Image (cartoon, rainbow, N blue to C red; front, side, top):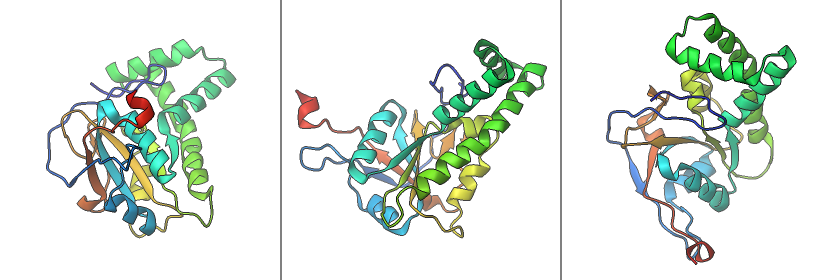
Length: 219
């Protein structure tokens, strides 16, 4: 199943299982928060990590990371959709036509509608870059990671270079960058079936398991 624009929901393509580093999610006291050495070290070193998580728990785990590490979320799909809506409104294009073009892109990527959608997506890329840049620069003097979620459109529309630049170990970062990679069957660092451009295999860490409920949530 390829990534698709339906409101803000993304479909993630199944992939072949590969063996990578796995770390379990543990609870911290009654808070149910993932606290592991690899994550703490990443925050300190301001490194890039692709975090493999079970797709059905991706949202809950992202929330735990925000709570436990003060992560600042950049939901790539939300930024893209907001930009597409603004561009479509400015151009007088009905939103239903944009969604229809997305379907056309999946069925016939060389069609006129698909090319029109590609142009709108290209116009949205500066907004995605700006959102990430602002998140990285948002709290100078503090250590809190930037958490990229719902990033499959970068693969679908051919903009994985954004992740390549963030993962490049020769590029200094103002904060750690964590990418949530939803997995259906332990498929490894893939977004919409495309490999996440890592510099080293150690940049992929699997958070294995599900978040533990807090005391209030358990009631």
